[in-house]
Length: 225
Image (tube, rainbow, N blue to C red; front, top):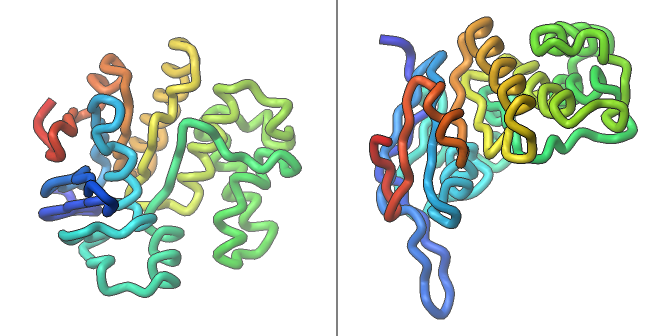
Protein backbone atom coordinates (compact mmCIF):
# COMPACT_ATOMS: atom_id res chain seq x y z
CA UNK A 1 0.00 0.00 0.00
CA UNK A 2 1.34 3.44 -0.90
CA UNK A 3 2.48 5.97 1.67
CA UNK A 4 -0.07 8.06 3.56
CA UNK A 5 0.57 11.73 2.70
CA UNK A 6 -2.48 13.51 4.16
CA UNK A 7 -5.06 12.47 6.74
CA UNK A 8 -7.53 13.84 9.24
CA UNK A 9 -9.44 12.30 12.13
CA UNK A 10 -12.65 13.53 13.76
CA UNK A 11 -12.24 16.89 12.04
CA UNK A 12 -14.81 19.41 13.23
CA UNK A 13 -15.37 23.07 12.41
CA UNK A 14 -17.88 25.38 14.05
CA UNK A 15 -18.19 29.08 13.32
CA UNK A 16 -19.21 30.91 16.47
CA UNK A 17 -21.85 33.64 16.56
CA UNK A 18 -25.30 34.34 17.94
CA UNK A 19 -26.27 31.00 16.39
CA UNK A 20 -23.18 28.73 15.98
CA UNK A 21 -22.83 27.16 12.54
CA UNK A 22 -21.58 23.56 12.63
CA UNK A 23 -19.94 22.96 9.24
CA UNK A 24 -17.88 19.81 9.76
CA UNK A 25 -19.02 17.21 12.28
CA UNK A 26 -16.20 14.68 12.39
CA UNK A 27 -14.59 14.23 8.98
CA UNK A 28 -12.27 11.26 8.47
CA UNK A 29 -9.98 11.11 5.44
CA UNK A 30 -6.84 9.35 4.26
CA UNK A 31 -4.99 10.30 1.06
CA UNK A 32 -2.11 8.20 -0.24
CA UNK A 33 0.78 9.06 -2.54
CA UNK A 34 -0.28 9.35 -6.17
CA UNK A 35 -4.00 9.12 -5.39
CA UNK A 36 -6.50 11.32 -7.22
CA UNK A 37 -9.55 12.02 -5.09
CA UNK A 38 -12.61 14.17 -5.81
CA UNK A 39 -14.78 15.75 -3.13
CA UNK A 40 -18.28 16.78 -4.16
CA UNK A 41 -21.17 18.37 -2.30
CA UNK A 42 -23.80 21.04 -2.63
CA UNK A 43 -22.88 24.70 -2.36
CA UNK A 44 -22.34 25.66 1.27
CA UNK A 45 -21.66 22.09 2.41
CA UNK A 46 -18.18 23.01 3.65
CA UNK A 47 -15.94 21.72 0.83
CA UNK A 48 -13.73 24.81 0.71
CA UNK A 49 -13.64 24.94 4.51
CA UNK A 50 -12.39 21.35 4.56
CA UNK A 51 -9.71 22.11 1.98
CA UNK A 52 -8.52 25.14 3.95
CA UNK A 53 -8.26 23.04 7.10
CA UNK A 54 -6.38 20.25 5.32
CA UNK A 55 -3.96 22.83 3.96
CA UNK A 56 -3.33 24.39 7.35
CA UNK A 57 -4.84 27.70 6.22
CA UNK A 58 -7.42 27.58 9.03
CA UNK A 59 -7.63 25.77 12.37
CA UNK A 60 -10.25 23.13 13.20
CA UNK A 61 -12.49 23.34 16.23
CA UNK A 62 -11.58 19.73 17.01
CA UNK A 63 -9.67 16.88 15.44
CA UNK A 64 -6.24 16.21 14.01
CA UNK A 65 -4.66 16.77 10.59
CA UNK A 66 -1.45 15.00 9.61
CA UNK A 67 0.73 15.85 6.61
CA UNK A 68 3.43 13.33 5.76
CA UNK A 69 2.53 11.67 9.06
CA UNK A 70 3.24 14.82 11.09
CA UNK A 71 0.49 16.50 13.08
CA UNK A 72 0.14 20.17 12.19
CA UNK A 73 -1.50 20.91 15.54
CA UNK A 74 1.91 21.15 17.20
CA UNK A 75 3.41 23.52 14.62
CA UNK A 76 3.89 27.27 14.96
CA UNK A 77 2.45 29.47 12.22
CA UNK A 78 5.94 29.83 10.72
CA UNK A 79 6.41 26.06 10.74
CA UNK A 80 2.99 25.62 9.12
CA UNK A 81 4.01 28.00 6.37
CA UNK A 82 7.20 26.03 5.77
CA UNK A 83 5.26 22.76 5.65
CA UNK A 84 2.76 24.23 3.17
CA UNK A 85 5.61 25.37 0.93
CA UNK A 86 7.35 21.99 1.01
CA UNK A 87 4.57 19.39 1.28
CA UNK A 88 1.48 20.96 -0.33
CA UNK A 89 0.46 22.72 -3.51
CA UNK A 90 -2.68 24.82 -3.98
CA UNK A 91 -4.80 25.54 -7.06
CA UNK A 92 -7.97 27.65 -7.03
CA UNK A 93 -10.81 28.47 -9.42
CA UNK A 94 -9.02 31.71 -10.27
CA UNK A 95 -5.36 31.30 -11.17
CA UNK A 96 -3.98 34.14 -8.97
CA UNK A 97 -0.99 34.63 -11.28
CA UNK A 98 0.93 37.86 -10.78
CA UNK A 99 0.26 39.94 -13.92
CA UNK A 100 3.65 41.66 -14.08
CA UNK A 101 5.63 38.40 -14.10
CA UNK A 102 6.04 35.90 -16.93
CA UNK A 103 4.60 32.40 -16.74
CA UNK A 104 8.03 31.00 -15.83
CA UNK A 105 8.54 33.64 -13.14
CA UNK A 106 5.10 32.93 -11.67
CA UNK A 107 5.87 29.23 -11.50
CA UNK A 108 9.29 29.90 -9.97
CA UNK A 109 7.81 32.10 -7.22
CA UNK A 110 7.37 29.32 -4.58
CA UNK A 111 11.02 28.32 -5.13
CA UNK A 112 12.20 31.89 -4.69
CA UNK A 113 10.19 32.04 -1.47
CA UNK A 114 12.32 29.04 -0.42
CA UNK A 115 15.36 31.18 -1.32
CA UNK A 116 16.42 28.94 -4.21
CA UNK A 117 18.84 30.70 -6.55
CA UNK A 118 17.23 32.61 -9.41
CA UNK A 119 18.57 30.53 -12.33
CA UNK A 120 17.91 27.01 -10.97
CA UNK A 121 14.41 28.08 -9.90
CA UNK A 122 13.60 29.30 -13.42
CA UNK A 123 14.97 26.07 -14.88
CA UNK A 124 12.67 23.98 -12.67
CA UNK A 125 9.78 26.31 -13.54
CA UNK A 126 10.32 25.81 -17.27
CA UNK A 127 10.45 22.04 -16.76
CA UNK A 128 7.12 22.17 -14.92
CA UNK A 129 5.60 24.29 -17.70
CA UNK A 130 6.80 21.76 -20.27
CA UNK A 131 4.96 19.01 -18.36
CA UNK A 132 1.68 20.90 -18.76
CA UNK A 133 2.30 21.71 -22.42
CA UNK A 134 3.30 25.35 -21.96
CA UNK A 135 7.00 25.29 -22.80
CA UNK A 136 6.44 27.72 -25.69
CA UNK A 137 4.58 30.16 -23.42
CA UNK A 138 7.13 30.40 -20.61
CA UNK A 139 8.10 34.02 -21.35
CA UNK A 140 4.53 35.28 -21.85
CA UNK A 141 2.71 37.38 -19.28
CA UNK A 142 -0.57 36.03 -17.83
CA UNK A 143 -2.53 38.59 -19.86
CA UNK A 144 -1.14 36.99 -23.03
CA UNK A 145 -2.36 33.49 -22.06
CA UNK A 146 -5.79 31.93 -22.55
CA UNK A 147 -7.90 30.94 -19.56
CA UNK A 148 -6.89 27.31 -19.87
CA UNK A 149 -3.22 28.21 -20.25
CA UNK A 150 -3.36 30.37 -17.13
CA UNK A 151 -4.90 27.51 -15.16
CA UNK A 152 -2.31 25.03 -16.43
CA UNK A 153 0.33 27.53 -15.37
CA UNK A 154 -1.26 27.56 -11.91
CA UNK A 155 -0.98 23.75 -11.79
CA UNK A 156 2.69 23.99 -12.79
CA UNK A 157 3.26 26.51 -9.99
CA UNK A 158 1.58 24.18 -7.49
CA UNK A 159 3.77 21.28 -8.64
CA UNK A 160 7.15 22.99 -8.98
CA UNK A 161 8.04 22.38 -5.32
CA UNK A 162 7.34 18.64 -5.79
CA UNK A 163 4.69 18.52 -3.06
CA UNK A 164 3.28 15.31 -1.61
CA UNK A 165 -0.27 16.51 -2.29
CA UNK A 166 -2.03 19.25 -4.26
CA UNK A 167 -5.32 20.69 -2.97
CA UNK A 168 -7.42 22.02 -5.84
CA UNK A 169 -10.60 24.03 -5.20
CA UNK A 170 -12.87 24.09 -8.29
CA UNK A 171 -9.82 24.44 -10.58
CA UNK A 172 -11.90 24.03 -13.75
CA UNK A 173 -15.02 25.84 -12.55
CA UNK A 174 -14.27 28.93 -14.64
CA UNK A 175 -13.55 27.06 -17.89
CA UNK A 176 -15.58 25.66 -20.76
CA UNK A 177 -15.84 21.86 -21.05
CA UNK A 178 -13.06 21.37 -23.60
CA UNK A 179 -10.62 23.63 -21.75
CA UNK A 180 -11.53 21.99 -18.43
CA UNK A 181 -10.70 18.63 -19.99
CA UNK A 182 -7.29 19.91 -21.14
CA UNK A 183 -6.53 21.24 -17.65
CA UNK A 184 -7.61 17.96 -16.06
CA UNK A 185 -5.39 15.98 -18.43
CA UNK A 186 -2.47 18.22 -17.49
CA UNK A 187 -3.20 17.45 -13.83
CA UNK A 188 -3.23 13.71 -14.56
CA UNK A 189 0.15 13.93 -16.35
CA UNK A 190 1.68 15.75 -13.41
CA UNK A 191 0.24 13.22 -10.98
CA UNK A 192 1.51 10.28 -13.01
CA UNK A 193 4.95 11.78 -13.68
CA UNK A 194 5.62 12.87 -10.11
CA UNK A 195 3.55 10.51 -7.97
CA UNK A 196 1.74 13.46 -6.43
CA UNK A 197 -1.64 13.06 -4.76
CA UNK A 198 -4.50 15.38 -5.76
CA UNK A 199 -7.55 16.29 -3.68
CA UNK A 200 -9.98 17.97 -6.07
CA UNK A 201 -13.09 19.84 -4.95
CA UNK A 202 -15.51 20.08 -7.88
CA UNK A 203 -19.17 20.42 -8.86
CA UNK A 204 -18.45 18.58 -12.13
CA UNK A 205 -19.66 14.99 -11.71
CA UNK A 206 -18.11 13.88 -15.02
CA UNK A 207 -14.73 15.27 -13.97
CA UNK A 208 -14.99 13.72 -10.50
CA UNK A 209 -15.77 10.32 -12.04
CA UNK A 210 -12.40 10.39 -13.80
CA UNK A 211 -10.49 10.42 -10.51
CA UNK A 212 -9.72 7.28 -8.58
CA UNK A 213 -12.15 7.96 -5.73
CA UNK A 214 -15.19 10.20 -5.24
CA UNK A 215 -16.45 11.32 -1.83
CA UNK A 216 -19.43 13.50 -1.00
CA UNK A 217 -19.48 16.02 1.83
CA UNK A 218 -23.00 15.85 3.21
CA UNK A 219 -24.39 16.86 6.60
CA UNK A 220 -20.89 17.64 7.85
CA UNK A 221 -19.42 14.23 7.02
CA UNK A 222 -17.56 12.66 4.10
CA UNK A 223 -19.32 9.69 2.52
CA UNK A 224 -18.58 7.47 -0.45
CA UNK A 225 -19.90 9.12 -3.62
